[in-house]
Image (cartoon, rainbow, N blue to C red):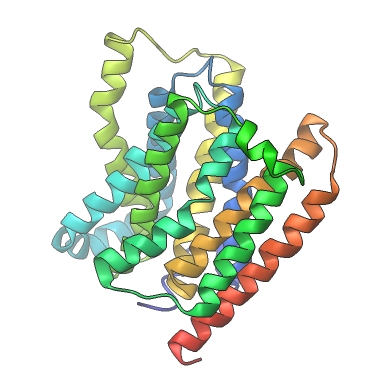
Length: 313
């Protein structure tokens, strides 16, 4: 796997481009907000419309800054068009569209919970596609972090996990998680282009594949995008933070520490999402948040140690 990735061309982001764990934590923070916003506007903003405009605007914004590099590196993109299209469909077209559809029927906490399955799915994808094995320390870190996520979700009561209600929305979210695990695993095959070019091309490619679904939602489903401040605020947030900034941070982090270690940061989703609920929704801070944080960080440390031993570092 390539180490280091492409951090050039991102201005202030390039300054923290050598701190993969900070980049991955920022990613999780932005994605936690994505689930909360997606659920908050689920009855107001159509899911496919939200996904289409999110990626279209994000792609155009990045393209405006990356256009000279896009023209320069376009021959490389064209040579590797198959993997670019596959990554765009998995990570852009499908993932967030399925997530927003699922959030029409399920709770944000359920969506955050199911995304903690991603580290295991990444390991399975890695073994199936590349015969990549995990070390004992990585597996131990996975289990410790999983217990931390469970502590946050259950609030210290294991029976609370059994009390969660599941519905068809959860199936959509689980499908989204499986696709993004595949995207994360396949990132090692991305073409040797700069980060800004990869984001611009993948965002706009993913948005292009959403066009027929968006038309179906409007013409058959009868759901059009309401032009009000709620819609503008929601799309503005998901365009800037969970899209442009999160994908730049995540792709860079995966390039530096590998898919397996990066995937384990998903265990932070229920913790960060819970803390956001405390900050923005007035929910109470519980002792299980502290326990969960300690366990998750310990698991991430073990996984990182296992990755270094595996790589001979």
